[in-house]
Length: 385
Image (cartoon, rainbow, N blue to C red; front, side, top):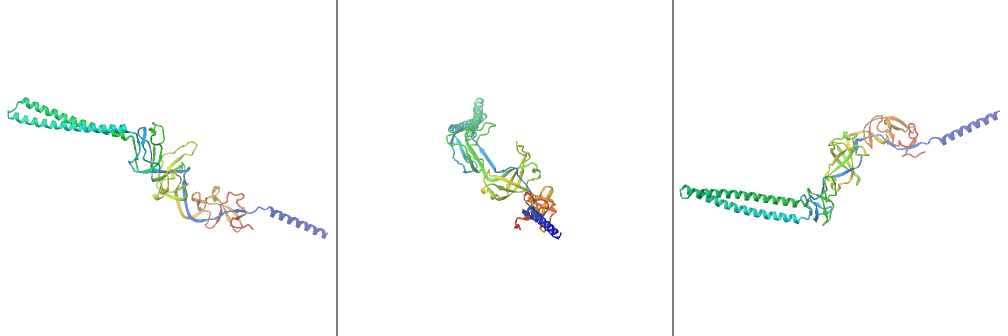
């Protein structure tokens, strides 16, 4: 009997050991997680553009001549710096130049005729005055005096008519010069030639009304640049002119540029198959930052709505639905779910107003499998035992 009981005890012990072994082998292994310490620091509330913005020049003119014709002179090239008033392109205009020269000569002839008429008028005036004195002295007839006075009046009228004719001739010069100027394309401001569409001896024509064509010259003033970017209509009401912002460029990924919001468009853009947006404009605080930039670069604008300094903060990615976080209990090696209250937030950090204390650890690995309330975990910085 004793031997039988002994065998039963041994069998039970073996079964217990087997069960323990099975449990040990099949037990859930601790999950590796990334832990972050609740710390104090700066937190910003920001909004960013929904699609890429663009570096824009404060002044840009896509220029074409006012009249069509054959390009006779093209003294500029792409990349050239030009001054306001400088000739960029000239249409063949020898016929108009000849008309201007003809008008100038006609004006000279008119001035000469006016001088002649006025000199004759002056002589007639003196003669009329002389005969009037003689008539008073009874030395000439009244008929001679009247004839002299009438002649003087006629000559004065002829002088005035000649002067008016001179003014008409000078107006003809202005007309001929205006027609000639229409064949000259001048720079409206200092800038850089971005594009030239045309070659010597080619024909150019002005754009028909309502139809856009390539400009003959694309002129950019790159001494003043700003960013134009679309903001979602939901975020737009919170943005005010004068707010601080940060600009980032794909061409310079390692640098951020300080900026100010200078304008919010007073209307919403409704583009097909895209969200409704409001365009904003941001200007660089340090104008030296624009020295290496080119109009047309893609850019992003991050507008700073609010700032909190030295407040408890955690990575935003650690926060789950309903403001829940998983707090690491170091003594037990498990995660415990906890509800928190948040304040200012952005994509990187979120302010914690209650529910966590500085120094506690939370996990940001919330998207990993089995990272749930009560899960046994091992920080990735530790070695699994």
